[in-house]
Length: 317
Image (cartoon, rainbow, N blue to C red; front, side, top):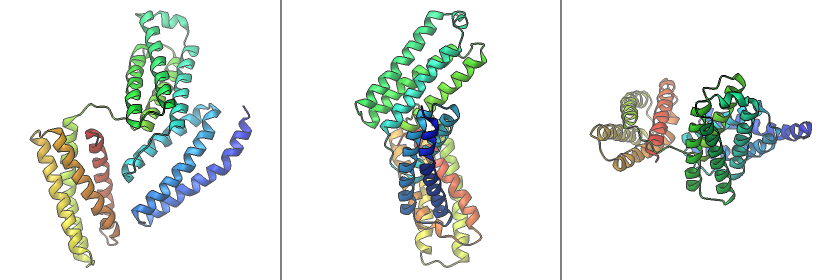
């Protein structure tokens, strides 16, 4: 492999990716329009995916880690910007190939005598074989161009088999084996991020905590918005106050519904209404604040968006 040639081809694309990222940062800092931010972010993703495709053949652990970190950040940005996600088939194939290669490396680094010392060596070998099988099945799903939902179902088998694999081999007394296991775990996480898989487990206690936090943040938000609009008479004052009150009311209603063990389907509907109210409130009004309240409003907005994102993941909306 001509590493120098690959890196040379990546330099110009990498510069464009960095410039686009800086441009998006500038738009956000200057409180640009939501649609403009989303459009520029989508352009960034096109450039980034093109660069990532060129970098993956390098088979370099530092590069792979960087790719996984950016993949995780990309997932977060998708959620914060409310951008519909479509799994990139080429990236999924590359990630799965890398994952299977890391499993190969695990066995090449791990002395056979250590594996044979495990309580059930045959079970360990069967676990590894099963992990290979579900990874190959995932590759087949991607190549058949299955829907995103079907891909997430295929990925769920990968995650389940990976957990069994980790439990079976994590007690091996080998630094090299432990490093390889960590790489495998990172690879599974990268696949989870790319498929936007969310486990079906619903933690009601966590959902209640998030709803309580949102209720509290909404109350603080009302105080700040009133102070801001009392200090400066904006033409949209009445609309902003009404929308802030609507957001607080819906936050209270959601928390009450969770506290009374309302059916999950109804909770999801309440959370969706809260989510949409927040989107309107933030992008149409709060971003326009230019008084002393701006800093605290920005901090509240970050916390509210984070809690809403976590709650959305819990409810798998």
